[in-house]
Length: 251
Image 1: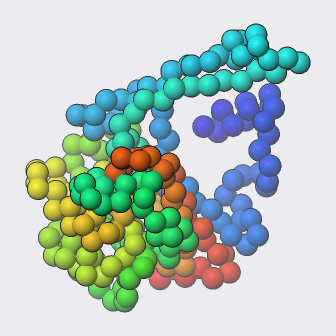
Image 2 (image 1 turned 180 degrees about the vertical axis):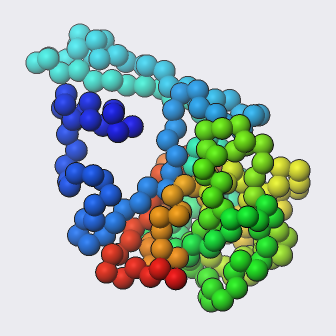
């Protein structure tokens, strides 16, 4: 991606703002928590790989535009669970809000609580000890499995929430529960209790996050806005954490 960005800058389309991307802007640091989506990338074995097809080429557009101007248009085909994904209740509940109907206020500037959960194939409720009130927060479970992204191991073995953990979270009422692994449920459990119960409680679910290790335990805020696709319950997203540098807390 860095090479593509540098090339774009050399040919035009230079991005505004400070160089380096991670530099604080107005006292805030922005951390991208998503994986890149690209043609042919590894996905769940049962899902089609995304395709990115040229719809209008620069050469074609130059033929009907004037002054040496051209543009590029693509058609992207992918499943709703590709890359870093947001799930809303409609995914499991036909009467629940879909991506177009889910309230955006639940997804903007949500206080983040990062919960260390590495080394737990089945994430126990004990990881939440002494965290206090989680209502209205974004609970992001840092398992470290994002290090396997891009390999078949990422999709063959995953952490998942223990039943007691699901009980705890549905009662705690966070706005969002996120993980840096492929799923909140065990692949062997076809009842999908974590997704079913969390979404049933109106809690949005984020999967396949990355970069949680660069966040403070508290003091950051999550914003993740999906494309408002009517009739869809999941879609790739680009969540970001905003850290007020003066107020960060490394618990």
